Length: 346
Image (cartoon, rainbow, N blue to C red; front, side, top):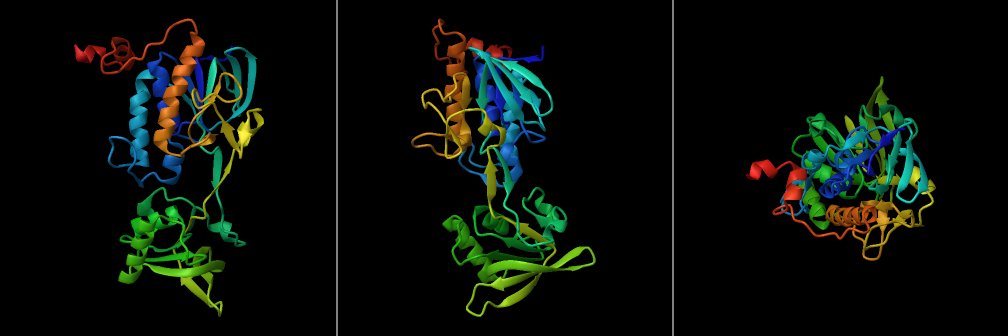
């Protein structure tokens, strides 16, 4: 028989977690499938300890803190999580009737599907220097998961985007030395971050070079230095001592199995009806960074809005003859009972 549920949510990032909450308010059950080993998506994979400032009513929180709060919020609805697996097959057997099969052989029968998979599966753009892969996750890192790991180390950061500069600024006070290497004198980060990096350079807390890593030197099995060709007329070559090399060249997103589901795409993103966030296939919805429409903004708060509208539409499709009334968590006994707070208010 497999697993039976009202809705399958693909993706356990912040938007996927909020979708669970909105579906729960509608009295709908859901299961969640994610390729990662835990909830959080890009928030916990890319910037778990970076501050986020644009969540309504939350002046500042880290990626980890946001995911923790969202999990607490949707906990009353008891979602079932299926981690470390992808949705490989979707079979539509009739109206409001889907059979989903995952890479681990899990079979889920559901009435609607919400895709909240961010940009799909993503992997960092790697440093193309032969032999460097030997040091990956030892001295070469494409993500910062534990900032304290780099304390008191001679750190070299490659890249000129937001992630590179954000981590340079974050780590500057704790490392033994810091060198930032960008390919050109033009950075792709926010102006405020560039100004902070330049201030660190002027104060002697960071060294900035313009060029590219073309080789390295190792001592026994350890990375000792990187060989840099500078972007000057003489193409000066220098060797920079390094304990930890952090590379932020961006991400290479791939839709993965989503691309094989027969849904209408525009530049590798899913087209949706902005009034419902339904895709070209009835019963399948897409919210967050994976969808596209006129005026689309890739913001977490935009995804939250999309999740609310998708949940209401799903409820309407399940009960088309029943008039929907807008209910508010502050006053509705029905919603308060679903949230498990009705008794607490008495």
